Length: 80
Figure (spheres, one colour):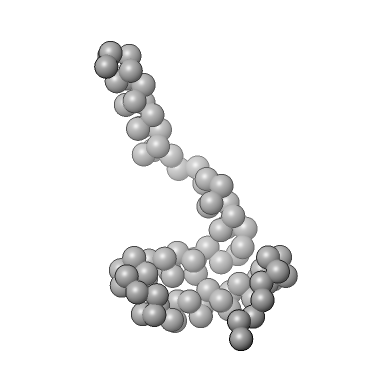
């Protein structure tokens, strides 16, 4: 690999690591009005590795989702 190719790879790595701009996923989550609840739920799952241990976080996210009108936006159906 030439020096130029290594420089390009190093520049690309810095751009990814130093990227503070929200990506498309972030924009979608922020638009729901429930980004904090989503982060809390994801953090819980990351720490516990079991969704069943995150029922409180899941309920908080679910309530936020309803309050923010996302059921209508995404045509979600209540599970029976």
